[in-house]
Length: 123
Image (cartoon, rainbow, N blue to C red; front, side, top):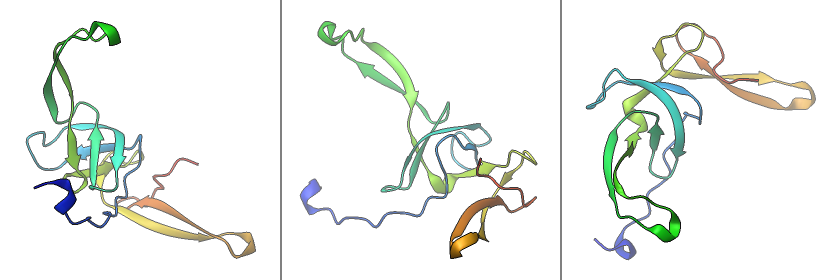
């Protein structure tokens, strides 16, 4: 189907951030853990280090110093197939949200572990 005829999809809410450690809970790489390299909120997919490895055949291009051959790289994985690993309890967990009231009527939302209650955001 040509790109001109596709309906634009609504952005998916993704609670993962770059540099989070996640564990794959379903799919061919079930059980693997890795670091999030990129988050695509438009499609709801993540690029996780050493997960969903694919082989990419590249042609040599001396002008751009590309050697060519078969290269292995990561492929995107749906965000629903992974869970964040809590740094405090070292378990795969769901993400909860905690709202803190600050001075001046401001509010700060932080991500918390549903198992131990520890914050997942580095301050």
